[in-house]
Image 1 (cartoon, helix red, strand yellow):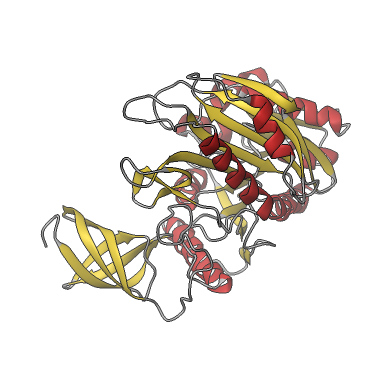
Image 2: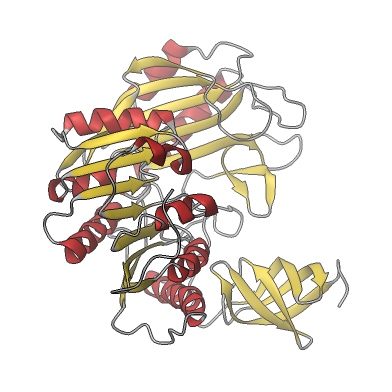
Length: 470
């Protein structure tokens, strides 16, 4: 096989969600955006011993369990992976991958059977229209083409396609997207060009609270010209929506690159946050603060985590560390069964929101600290009885993980949005004397390749931890 050449192969199995292993000319090649059972053509992009990867050109024949996509943008938009699978089939695929990834990690420690540990996969209450936050990009689909507002083209990050019928957000968010694009066109606003670092419109961020219906809209631009705030607010406030717009914002971002950076934000109308409710608690959410993108799925995940806490230590869990705590959602949900909860989060805006939300909910036994987990643990003088980990996709930083394991708590609850990161960290946790006791998967991201995995790990009776706390 030669790099750059086109080959045809049948996808035999998954290498990872959204990547399949195609058998082409008797050789295994990992090809992104493929499913088992498909016949595909691909360009060989990597040709190294033990690692051959291909870039999908075309699906020549669908798998037997595929159907027509439910979204007209499927195939072009890079946002979703499983638009051609019935949701039940998607859940089976994700469950199989979770068991494979975690199972391989545990086999290194002599565990070959997950029965009695694995508690199944729970689907999202909604498989469409579930996202409470969407970040659209301004751009164009082809060079010198008309302005678009939507998602990046699959495999072509510089190109953006219009996504007026995106199925993972609800009709309110779709209407706002269309209205902002039309407003930009009628007011002769150009989009930001990444290569030349010129232009005006960059992103549209929309949040909609699933349980209260409150909506927050933020238009991100450079400082090149005025946003024409009055006219924009009139257009948005005049829309017929099921929810209610409670805030319209304008964020300036003059930084080079594609990431959304908040250099300054102005409130054009209303307030710069919305309220939503999760399992009886109320949370204020700003446009940039972390909050699970699937509210009803998050209720399932957080209830599972709370159940794991109580199954491990009963109704009173002593001192709890909630590490990588975000806006403090989990910390507040377990506070009623703890003597004290300490949340640590590196993002200042998230910590500020956590403090406000705890006060809003009348929770007085939770304290939130801002900083890197490894360093900030020094500031907490009470030793933990239970530790909850909900790290970013990359998992727990190795030095921080050693530090965490050094406390020697009896139980650790680990919530992961990337199962390969969890599998890597489980190896280290096993080395420290812990064993997997419960595991469940919650599909928080239908139509994409991602899931959330929640595990309970307990320290073996009579076994000392490997690391000493210093």
